[in-house]
Amino acid sequence: MKVRILSAASRDLLQGHAFYERQRRGLGDYFLDSLFSDIDSLAITAGVHTISFGAYRRLLSKRFPFAVYYRVEEGDAMVYAVLDCRRRPAWIRRRLG
Image 1 (cartoon, helix red, strand yellow):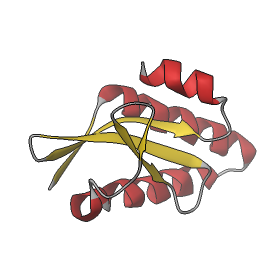
Image 2 (spheres, one colour):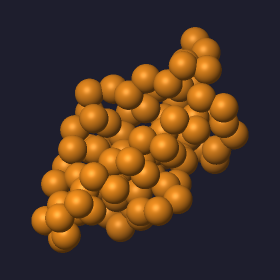
Image 3 (cartoon, one colour):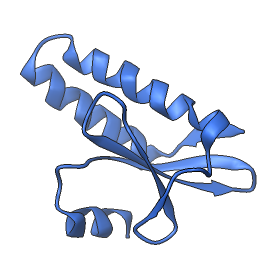
Image 4 (cartoon, rainbow, N blue to C red):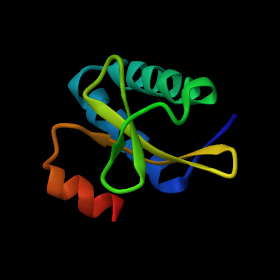
């Protein structure tokens, strides 16, 4: 299965990188490596994750408190958002709108 990261999800990843890089130099790069590894796993596992917030499936990151929200559309895993799980559920619901 092909995995596509939409522009909004790319912005989420860059914001996460900036946040962790401010915490400790190099941690932002580790964040991106970890999240891209999780996202790459969708090529094999897309569609098996629980449905959250409507029609989005949620893949929880293995290393960081982030979730990847995606849909399977026409045989592709479309990543719509990569969000911090520590945010309020109402905020996440609005963001996924």
